[in-house]
Image 1 (tube, rainbow over the protein chains, first blue to last red):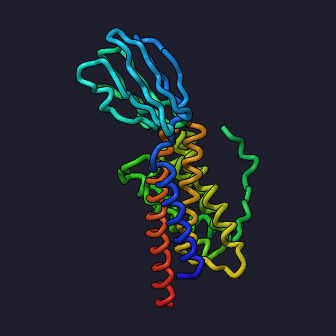
Image 2: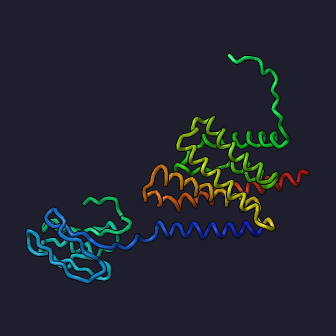
Image 3: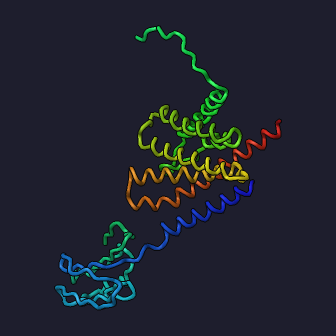
Length: 119
Length: 177
């Protein structure tokens, strides 16, 4: 083995590990989220500004909280609170929904972590 | 029917032409044998015909290696019936890129590379170019990028395998002489 061979192997290892990090690493953070209410788009909200959004639905008002580039359902008038248990969403493609109150939120980013999700 | 008025046309061939023909025939044989092997992923195959290109590069220089590399892909595709199909363009793009990088690498002063280094460089260039062609011309979808790390890992592994085979070939031929 020549000295150049070793160098090539090292560079190849670096390149391949970089590729794994770049393409298999954590997805890119979302830029904004789209909130749907009653089947139509209610509002696009930025994930960079802290805010609590009060979204009206058939059961009452759901609260969505934006903080540190993430969004979550923080309060909901529904029974099982599945939307709140979905927790924080921060990556493109992530979504949570409150079916009883007909409200959903999806994070939009440069990349989407999922093509589609079914519940 | 062709008239016989050009009864004798002799093509002058040089020793180098014969050499290229012999070596290309060898590379094509390996290329064809390998095309019969099943592949887990499109675009991933051991690339054993590259052994010939690397050995030729080390033994006879870049000019001959470039001929052998390009002719192998051209004739291989004609025999397999993939000429001018997407497979061919993937293969051809890969071959051109790997020959280009071999040319650059053999120009480095002090000749620091042996068969292993050449082989890994050429495998990486081949895979990268093939991926580039696939991505820009055939499937421009971001999801394809997720395959890139796996494909490049395969390229490195197969590059090391072929390079090791070439090095072993030279070692055993030196012993016999």
